Image (cartoon, rainbow, N blue to C red):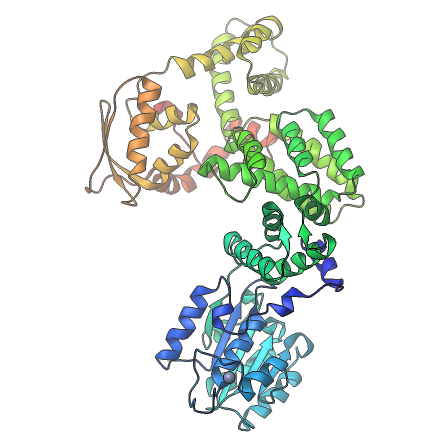
Length: 578
Ligand SMILES: [Zn+2]
């Protein structure tokens, strides 16, 4: 979405709210409470560093904050202020000059234009001279990560023995490119992306001040598009206000952001999920016809898959309008494994799109991949299938004398077909179709599987119980149990656990009620402080490395890797204990 915003910034035939509402003191810095509090504390305790490092995404207010700090260091108020202070008057001569950008003792440097050691040498040489007319000489070095190693080394010497009346304020979007030796000599402040609520309240206040009326969701869309950058949000608000003549309509904002027809994107995602490839391609072409770029479509689909996965876990999210929330909730019911798989396809395609000679073709290939991907089984389901298949097969091999050499590969393919049918969630059709069109062998596999879901045995071990939860798609609970729970004892329908995080007591309640629901029997789940076993994940990690190499030589796994060349072994379960 970023590329659209930069285009908008180039137009300036509106009132430039970003400049008008640029914060002048700490109280006006929105969404940066931690920074403000920390700076105030350091100031009160007289523990101000010689150098500050401000990090954060572009547009989050680093330069503005740097100027506010420079004013706090130099403000003299009515002339009586002797020390730096948190309250800034914006009225004294240092404050005014800093606001106008013509204060001689505040030197702003863009590191991008002075990457080399010579550029920085000029600054370092001037450091030794006292301030002209101020408490502190302040060097604000923007994009400091652009400096070369030699320049950083030269700077480091000054930071090691800084002159009394000099302060440095570094700003960067890329903290990782700054040497640790520099970072360790700075007081570091992370400027946060401003959260959706704070940002939208800020914009609503500005609208009120400026007598701009607006539909509530229009402001929400602007805030989402600005991704937590106040500057971008204000630029977008500017443009929306000017387009809508100070009466902002959601529809026009969506158009402006290239998000019109977002519903079409949801429809497209749904078609991909249900493997209706030809309809999906039609909808994709429609969206393209409306002038939306393929990269924007993929980006929208990524957002949909993210929102659906999130809702699958946390159930509600107030960043969406109500109708959208309803649709996304519906999508979330497809389950995490499937949603995560589509996310992976999308994120990879998003990268590939940059290098594709024809974006539109690459986009439609992505749609095909999504449809195909949504119809595949998970590698874990697939493994289970093959094992069951092989067991049944070895029993049947005695009866079946003639087999073609390719029969094994064929049955694996048949299994994929079975899965496609199972995912169609039409059990009756599935069973009856199977009895007509599949061979006897495959029919047995399906029936076996269904029996497993319905006629379970009451689990006798913790591992059996975990398997039962998985088969009943209690994925989240399963994940919580294997990661955050130490088993103490597992007896007849009575489980004693130690929780890794004491506050996780929800897990106990959920486990007992879920087991009761599945097994139609009462379960007692209690917490105790006695040590207990390692968590399942901890145990798996220990075993995993030893078993990984050995297991890869197993012909069944070799088969899996043939079909899923990018598969990784992430967990190993002992089949015999099932
Ligand atoms: Zn002042």
